Every structure is written in structure tokens, then in C-alpha cells.
Length: 244
Image (tube, rainbow, N blue to C red; front, side, top):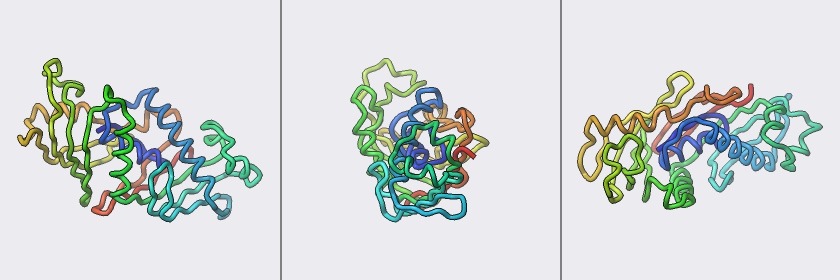
């Protein structure tokens, strides 16, 4: 469970992955990670075929992989990307600053639930055992909420007053909703269990203090926004903007 933000795939990927992999603050390290992932996503998107619609270069995806995750459908617009610069960008010859200076990016996409689970499992497996907080995570989507089950290493959770004690990985089952509050993305716990026992108010507070805000767009040194985020039984639909 972690923090998140909107604008490109990396954004929502970050939102979904962090919410199930490990907790973050929106600090320099996380912003740098976000920029690296946004750049990688943009390079892969721009290698796909697209077309100019007015001054916007538009790429549409239909069941295609970006950063190893299948995108069910998406429309990505690079407003202001000059035709004379297109070949350079399609070849991937740009950095994050170049992307920022070249275009205003808008993204609208839908990612199926199975693809999100595959993404989460992949990202968890890439973490070293020392950094891994979660294991065996499964996400089940419903209208406006997600149910997350798995195991958690409570001794790595900030604010746990018993973190100094030897502890086994604890099975958990929690239902979460996601909401925006100004520039922040926040999680609410609808209900939760750990070791087959309901969350106590104290445990509920530990998790919310740890996870919220999931991401804070105001911490980014440029404009970014998550305009829509819809969680449905079939997956996640979202839209966002970057560099307007």
C-alpha cells in the first residue's frame, strides 16, 4: 500500500502498485522514480503508430503492452509536439526535461483487473526480501472500491508499537476506497481483518496514517492532475494531464 499520482500510465500504475507494494511519501526519491517511469512509458507509447489531429499528436492503444502491462484501451495526446520533432521522439531521443518542454500530455485509459494484478505481482517480485512488506497479494475490484488480500510484514509498518518484536507475516483482508482531496489521493478503509480478527481502531489509524496521502500532486515541481478515476469490477478507468 503506498502513494500515488495522476497523468500518464506510470501515474496510475504507481497508484495501483504503491497501494499494494509499500508505503511512500511524495519526496524527492519518489518523484524521481515517477519521472523515470513516465519517461519510459512515453518512449514506449511514442513508438506506436499515431496521427496528428490539429496540433495534437494522438496515439490510441488497443490491447497493447506498455511497460509489460496490457492496456485494454487508451488515448494519449501530445499537444504541441511539433511534426519536425516527431522522428526524434519516436526514436526515444529525449529525456524527461525534453518531454516536459515539448508537449502537454493528456491520457485516458482503461486497464483490466487481471492486468493490474499481474502488474502488482511483478513489482512485488522485483523488491528484495529486505524491502518487501507484502506477499501473495490479490486485488478484487468492485464498484468504487477494491478488496486486497495477502500477507503483511507488520514489523516494517511505520507506527506499529510492537515492531521490535519477532513477528511472522500476517494474513490480511481489507476493503479500500480511493478518493481525491485537493491535490492529494487518499485511501479510506471500509473494513479490514488481520489474522482473522477485525481491525481495531488503533490498527485502522496506524494504516491510514501510514498510507495517506497516497500521493500528493502538489509535491511535483510541474503541473500534473488526475482528472478521473473509476474503479469497476472489470478494472480501472482513469484520465489525467501533465505539463499543461
